Length: 158
Image (cartoon, rainbow, N blue to C red):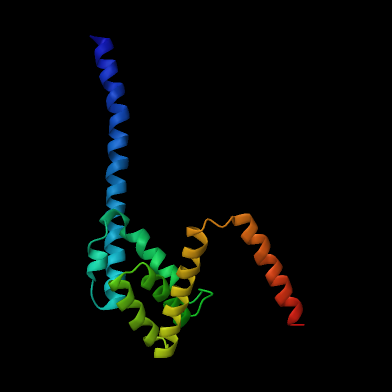
């Protein structure tokens, strides 16, 4: 009987801390979620559905990533970030992203001509990627040729 009570006591000693850790983590997740939600609402004047449909437990991390990539410390100016993202969005293709990044690029001063060129640059990258991949050009050979081309072009620009 004492042995059974001892085993049950040990189980409780193990289970209770695990439950407390779980409750603490859950409370942190909730407060992290609420903090991220409040910051998003402050930033955008609303809580957009793109964040609403994101898993609650991961929202704080996703929001932190969003903020950091769009922060003043970013080495890529906002207009160029949006043009890059528009080029990628056009190639995925994603209507949501195309709409968002076109409007954001314009808000950061991009002209219609810059938007058209960003999309064309994305298309050109996809075009040559298809040619190289589809024809199974050897990657090491490609790198050797490219490095030789760059060396030639650098010598011409001197």
